[in-house]
Image 1 (tube, rainbow, N blue to C red):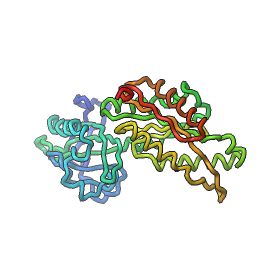
Image 2: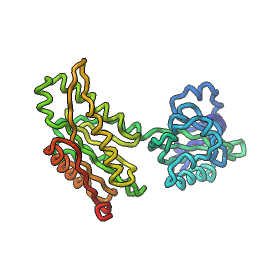
Image 3: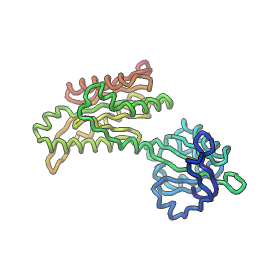
Image 4: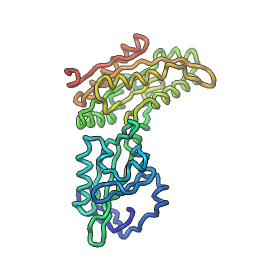
Length: 317
């Protein structure tokens, strides 16, 4: 809270019980403390217009503070999320400051996009009227993107499905809700055993780790990369326009091997192959993983490149 008197309630609108936190007569937070905080925080007027924010909130939105102050909260979100953001603002006003929570897509002026969660609550005057709205943000995309799962044995379609199921399940729900396709891109280093034989296990391992770092740098903020083995990764790319968008993400990943990876001055040449299954969120997860694995096997047999297939209703478009 930045000031005022409020009672924290659950997200269903029921008053908080004795086991929940109450905030009473919270003093205003000094501006210097707000600016130094790592947590993204902004305040809105009762109409939902940004009045103040800290640098962390500016970074979360990917916009300069001058662009945010005076902007309505809905203007920061993807158009499809406008109604839910507006409902959250109205909910705070209508229920006199109780907590509201919303997830939305934030698009920066540079074209990057990220999924965030905003928690809103009202600051009340002594008469119980909402005088301002406090917004606290969390970058969900960063949370998901930095999760790395090491499964050296995950090479079959079945084991891959078990590894990626939580990520793919969430991406599929998002694809159905937003009407924006999702792609599973499975990538592997071609002739990985030969790379180890020619360069030694330690150098090959270091080269492949550096290659994964290169690939991460080529991903959009809302793509998720999962390390599957010493020589393979899987990427879940969301918020795509069509199959060509998925191919574009994959092309950027394949371009990371155009130049050899340098390990302590030694150049290690690597080649990637990829299989891409693109879906509208309606296909079974097992179909996505087995399709991507089969396409990867075809691309590897051809010495690299990628193969792509559209599933679900996209296959009929």
